[in-house]
Image (cartoon, rainbow over all chains, first blue to last red; front, side, top):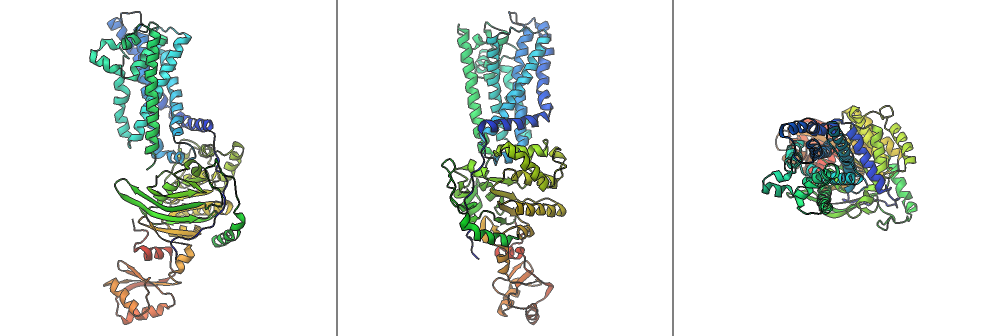
Length: 284
Length: 345
């Protein structure tokens, strides 16, 4: 009995190959279908931020007299709450990566003839869409509650660019965390640190200059600080006071570009890290 | 066509079927290649666990090849390396000529896998799961619809295919996964313990489905199992894996032939080794006789069972539960490894 028996041979046809854009669309469409089956993933991240924008901000405005500046406090917190809704939305989206791994089709996707980076990017596309929907609802409700917004074309562009890049960054954090932990409990346990803690330091509820100097310096490192300053510059603060608190320059446009570059840098870095961590952790 | 005839037919046709096809993206040499070619493949996990110890084998197109062994033998690690979800420590593996380490996308493009446990999107419908596979594997939309309809019918899920997979039974999910793996018409289909955890009735139903598909589809199947009857029923050849190494590779018929047409099995009180020695001295047991615990198995070859019984009596061996029967792959496995398949690993 021979250990290795010779087998016959034959030429075989080429494997099928899907186009990259089509693959990304397919993966995003799958994620969107799965997300639509769990409506809580859409609604739950909105609850806290909506409460902040609709109840807490107007109450604090009455109790403290607001910011004592040209900026309306209700709209200030309305935009600040975006700094909570995006992280929570992305953390929920990252949770689905764990579900995929434990009881979903992740291994089928890993066996598919598509680059594994696409699995991360497909999820990212849906996370962006979902966050956009939630941010629109939040800002809309804040406006209905009496927030004052100065909407211009350029302002919208700054707001959207900042929110988009910050979402990309946060999803990178969520995907990296999901790839690193093995249990959902560990993932959920990390949520306060990665999604909620920065919210309190990044000037979401008050200008960062109101904190002690050392905390202000730390806040300037967080991408959320830059993203919030940019979003307020776009919608409620054309003078760029938040950006000036960060950079201390006199050219507000220059400050905006610098902050956008900081958020973009974080977004690119975390996306690259998340793809690398996912690709390495998905195989043994 | 039974397995043997299929193989003989393939071997007769093979020279004519060796045609030169164009190379794909300049990466693959698609000239006359085996469907699966594994050479000195080795996997050592962090911590030093050597799961696969330099195995080599080759599988012909159209062949059904079984990797047989107990849990922990290295079967699933081997499948993992072939499907690019486990990184080999050393050695090479090729699917249809594509190196799984150097050309993973092309290797994945010619293969599909049915995993040991359920790997599906349960909230989605069965059809959505199949369509996802079709799109990822680049099956043209016009063909995919027809292909899915045909396969859903073949695996008997027509009535259920629009329902969420979460409402399927274990057997229905497994049939869906087999159908899904076939949507892209893979050249190589990996079935990793396809019937494990299923009740006997569903298991036999599923084996019928696989056997039926095998007759319809001209594809190579690599099947891992620790159920010997599955291997005997479905495989042209089997490799018996023990502790990460291949200890035998041949057709089930050839492996069984090595033990002759009949074996005698009995339980002995006292030393099984002494009993074996006594029977060998009398010439009724050969080197292939073996003992596992108190149970002794003696391939009879040219001897009659009566000769062996006479020897047992004249040696005054205290035996019980004596039976003669035809050998099974379990006996082959026991002979080669000294472990019973169902209890090992």
